[in-house]
Image (cartoon, rainbow, N blue to C red; front, top):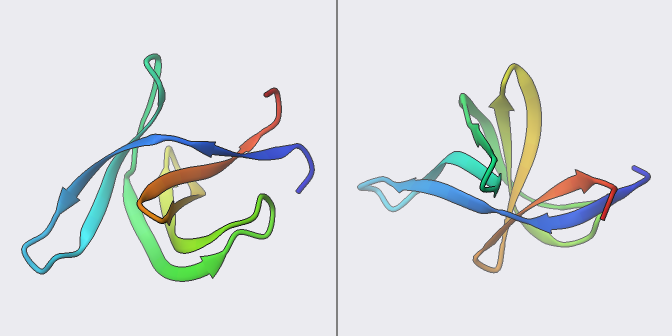
Length: 83
């Protein structure tokens, strides 16, 4: 995908009793917080568009599928350009 960059983001996470975690909200900045409506899939995968390997969360946010990555303890998204 053209014009994408790795953008590290803050994520509000719930830790379950069984040790698994569930991301609840993605915080891009002070003005842009996005509630994750549903986790559709979690798998180990490479991010082809911006590089990196980690746990890829396929999320439903505002009716759209989006990927959220957890790589070495840090969350990122493949954000559209402008940076």
